[in-house]
Length: 596
Image 1 (spheres, rainbow, N blue to C red):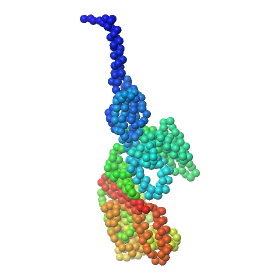
Image 2: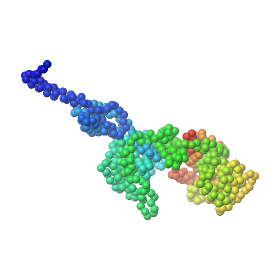
Image 3: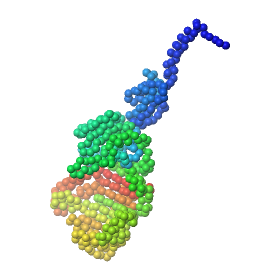
Image 4: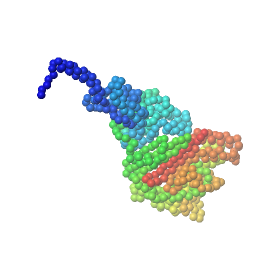
């Protein structure tokens, strides 16, 4: 059946359709909403996409909610400069067509360091970490020196301004670091920033204030011309500012300093950094393994060892430095694919069990004898060992016999003699140290050691008195006008040099050291070192009188000595200990600065 519209109806219907189309058109356009995407969490500085790149996608105005200018496009990419929660809106005029909640978190500094970095020193977050580090450094070197050195160092003034809230260029919630990569022979500093262009300009002006020339590039980077080396390059990538500093070779006298020929220019490094993607160093398997073995800290160091060391079973090292109120604690771990010291325990040192009280320094190493021999002259059959044995043989020394006579433990103690120091100071008008050194090495048999010492004394210009007692041989001589006595017994070699120690009572020094520095310190299979400046200060202050020294002169000398020691070093004591553990070796250390 065929139907038709009469002319009287067609005109009104046509008009009605046109009106309806006009009314519905805006609604149809709004129905094609822009692709805002879901709520999400992103890292500061990393570009995030909104909208659609498909043909015909509506062009809208994007408001990112972070104070940056709006953009009008169907598809946009935006990097949020700082952490926080922001509402992203797609707008048509004043009408909101869509929104998404974006949570922005700080970008970890390790994600800004390339994954193949061989060395990285970093502070994960400026706020809360930089302040104690600066405070400790000021205590260590003095506020004036620390302040001057910080002001002269690139980036550090900017970092301090950030943690104090004096600048908006740097993100105090992000980190700072120094790293090296194989493609660039030099060091690279990296710092999380909020306003990259402003940070680059501020750093450039700092260099210009020192009389250096800067070339600002159209891409936002800058090149700093140095007087006697390759230029530095400053650039920003994904929320971090980078400062590339090429290494330079030591110049011969009269020749200008030249950059290493094997080092690419800093511009090549810039392209390399901007081209790498992914998590960077943050997900390195080696770093993840080592990180779990070390305590939390303010500052961290990661080292990937060279190929030779890796081939020998030592892939890398990681450590933390924790600082609080004048005390710095180091905790480090060196990975090893093989059991250190062949799983053997070093000998028990005996000197520390009954030694004169009050050493101001102590050092001890305990290693199985065959492992000690490897460390000193190389493994059996190695070219290094053959060369060492041949050299000793030419000197008339039976090296193999001497090596077999060593037990593997060596202990060194240093003592200060305050009365002798003051007598010498008032006589010679110089603050020369006075005290004694006591050394002991365990032996399996004495004969090769006696023979080696006799040979050494005969070959030199020593004036030596040899005393043979029952099962003991002594060699008496002098060095720098100080008495020295070598004593070789059946199970040990000992050396005492300097002032006499007979007046000091003996005690278990090892027990006191372990109480202060840990139950295993100064024990078998350890390498331990301690310097006790607090003890030295106490010894200097102790004498109420010194025979032959007038009271007034002694008081003046004590005041001078104390002031001299304070100028020499502010630390109270320092300690270091290295010992094997499952999977590698543990390194612990401590420095305590004196409270004035």
